[in-house]
Image (tube, rainbow, N blue to C red; front, side, top):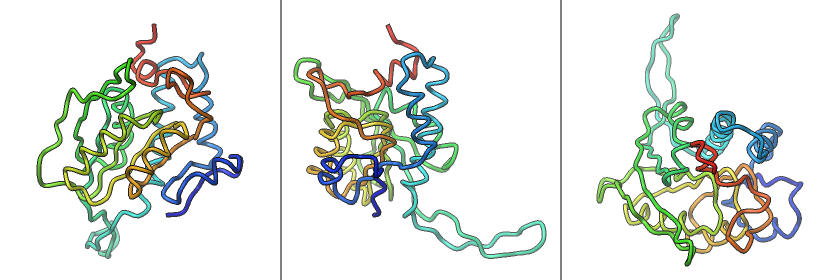
Length: 226
């Protein structure tokens, strides 16, 4: 898979990550990410902007989906056309991941949605699964895990473990922003997982928050900032 990491990233970052790691390098991605980062962006605009970025990510994340030939009728004639051939599923990590589901379904309305809820233990910083509705058998062909932020990688790792146990042959992870620490963890533990980001940030602070970041994505999406 081609790496789309921006040439504006420094050489240290570029030397760390493998080829299954994609950072959008597009003016629209930069523009919308700046809106998300701005602390003065209201919740409604934050949600709308997150939707736009999610769809930009989805275009990249679905480049390698399989197609099947089908016969259709246009208003003028019959023809052979191509439609998606694989069974697709979205797994949002609750709650913030819910903010990325609707824009995916807008473009792939046939996709299944399976929910997985995790929260971070603030003492250990490790994820705790409190809700899991993934079935035990009959896995989808392709799963896209969505979570706006990839920080330590703990929640994503726990989710990917569950998806892997389900038996999914191809798994992708989409996040709006990430810290290098989280990306490196996912690549070390799940080297086959394709990671798609709108932006790669500098580091995690001592509270495991992404810097410069955009605050708490869940709070900003659902307007619960205190």
